[in-house]
Image 1: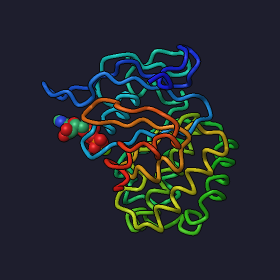
Image 2 (image 1 turned 45 degrees about the vertical axis):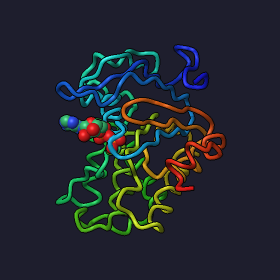
Image 3 (image 1 turned 90 degrees about the vertical axis):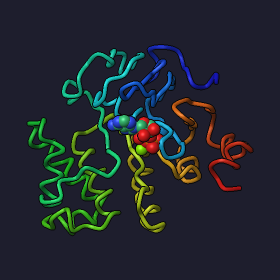
Length: 244
Ligand SMILES: Nc1ncnc2c1ncn2[C@@H]1O[C@H](COP(=O)(O)OP(=O)(O)O)[C@@H](O)[C@H]1O
Ligand SMILES: [Mg+2]
């Protein structure tokens, strides 16, 4: 897996030998990967492979062993709250929006740690341009949005923190195909603006078609790492993840 380890200190994000245990059970068994600034990289794998655990470890929401380097800092011994303001944002599986708050209130929550009023207003205007549907529904209670709209809100809220790195956990989950396409258009647009994205997906085909590079995770291990073109053509990927 030569492509999985760019030189140390070069990548925006690098995990080395990351492990996550729940009690005595190992969910992530020593994975290494790197995401360079400006890249759109995916981690694909079946349900239970360890993808969410990997993202939660990166965001310091659960304990892990191994090294996590982000912007040349060691993150692995820092708690989650110290990451705020460092430019890493996680859009969790299931979205984690505040169902009883309005769209506008949810977006404001994404900027709660900031006090640059003008910057926040500019970012809100930008999010509404990128996601016009949210603007139309600004005063609507978030719990009444469709699944796709909720996913867009979760992405919009993360953007309100002006992230440098966005971690996305299964943005396509539970959405109708047309909505999945729309959400992925947003992901491509965000990436085109220079935000680095690490995308976790069970929808391997779409993820690989969207990203330049990918990692395949199976039972807590990364088993393949390559460019998306090569992974899409790989017979092992085709058989296991593309239904071919
Ligand atoms: N809080 C938890 N406690 C115990 N086991 C867990 C917990 N969360 C996940 N697991 C287990 O860890 C493994 C990986 O889960 P997860 O990271 O959610 O995978 P994925 O996101 O790829 O579906 C699974 O076997 C799952 O049952
Ligand atoms: Mg998951």
